[in-house]
Image (cartoon, rainbow, N blue to C red; front, side, top):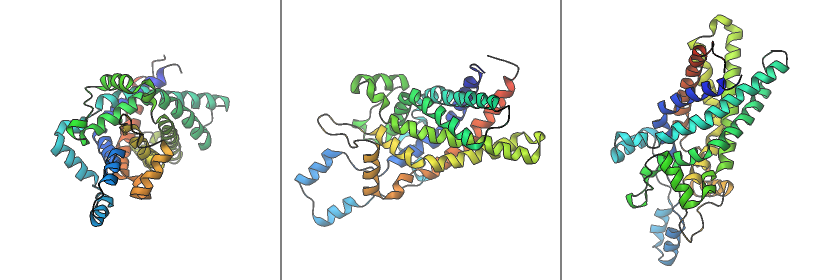
Length: 318
């Protein structure tokens, strides 16, 4: 197999990631909407208490905008280019994380198929291959993921508080310099968990759905309609499975630690508890609609492109 599966997966992932980047940006902004302010603001409220009715107003959750309203808000505040904030980080993330996870999944799957005499793997073994591949890929790609989340979220901050990263390389360099190299793996446990869920559900569901369709339609049915149906099913399953972890991951990666102050979240569990306590359990599904509307097209573009890349490279072996 060699590097071929990694190249195929990386190329298709970059195309899919760039095509759906604006939807991913809207999803991130929605996940961060209504986040509780950092500690200094809370201490100020304790020192100078507001009247009771004002306190009640402040504790009311902010009205949650829908994906169209959020997109319009970004366009008004940042212009059309605001929808492409962090696209360079998306390219790097897909080139590193997705190429690793998809290439490794394909390698593991083919090896296990050879060991089982060439018969298709059962669903649970595909899921196992996806879990391993997603965990390894996300560990390698976490720095690009941190940079991507911060670049996407920067436009929602007041001008004086923005990080103003010029590119993904500038973002990674500044994060390492200002916060230490370890901060590039902030939220890595969440990234690994999410990637394992997404990779396992996405790739395993696509393979299983494609096999089910072809078993009914025969080998002649291996065309665009089959690829679109199988990939959309995979995207829907992946979005539903990963949305809560993705929301917590976004908040942990984006949190801004003030000098001399404790971080807003002590970790993933603390973030989840504080989010549910202040905004309700459904807050973990903030951004679910844009997640589905992004994950569906992303997965369709990903696997349709992957099938075309495979056709182009079928006569090459490397």
